[in-house]
Length: 434
Ligand SMILES: *Cc1c(COP(=O)(O)O)cnc(C)c1O
Ligand code: SF4
Image 1: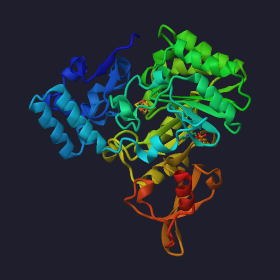
Image 2: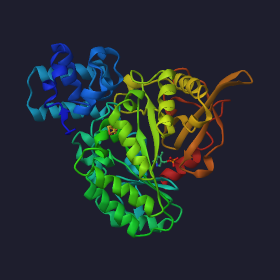
Image 3: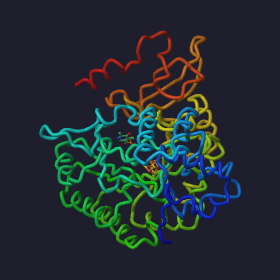
């Protein structure tokens, strides 16, 4: 299949969209001017069920929905469009609204940039001891955009927010200087948007450097869900698979960290074929997804998705709570509800599927998992634990927060038992001010 992009500029030409009401189309235009909007012909033709749009998870996933903006913001942009403002003026309105949407949660930009020989390595993040994140410049886009994506400022032309860097050499130097690093995670955007020549260049540089401490290369990608033809019929599909094979031949693990939000994304022939070809290279595929209202806030969806993943040879890995950014208002699910959905799905699976961990909040101090909701001496509490911590000593030690039925994120939680602070807070402040 030949890749065809749909976005704000041409979405009205999609035959299925033409059948929608004028009002529906205008809503998409309003929201699509603020939040990233990009879909493609695979998503439109093979994933979305246009006969049941109201309830279609994949439609909500890549097409802007009115409810994603607060009413005030919606009106602001709608008025700008109705008034026929100039492009630059519309962009200004869009940026004003975006800045209200917490474009960089958790101090991603300031706090996690590594330093080598007194230089800040823009395009890399190093938060947890074993794993370095790398944002290759050419991988800062995606085959389609998820409407909830916390990396969305990277796609909206706000250049000052763009993390990116070209220097694979610097990366190698950094990895060699940190003997405790075992994993590098290519991320974005979506690194699999890169062509084989560029991806191959990065991978070869890393393999040729024979970095002794490096054991695993991970690639975070939504390509299996949004464009499985990446591995089937693109010009360089074979070359991509050869690169995967090469990593395996060099004795390193390759783990594709695949992003799937709904079992629908696993049902098509192309995705099944792509998975087979990737697994044949010796790579493993692990899966992750946030929990999202309007898309997958139902234990049945997760049960079915995880079972299907395991049937196809994938390894369920993370179940995330949606971040406090972008259209979180629209997608949010309370922590209580998140725990209930997770528990209901998790408890109804065979042990083989229970490799998944969650509900997990990727917050400033680390990845915090909700282990349960219980009562201790008459006080209802959340039991929490770090899956990953800015300090590794925090990992795996249960702690307690006051139960709060409205809480949707860590910043809504207070320590239980009238404690003043969570056990990690003082140290976290010290670490961040270093
Ligand atoms: C999740 C995450 C990782 C990887 O953590 P693992 O527990 O090894 O999967 C690394 N860096 C950041 C910033 C992360 O959020
Ligand atoms: S594929 Fe990933 S990076 Fe791209 S828009 Fe979706 S969540 Fe964001």
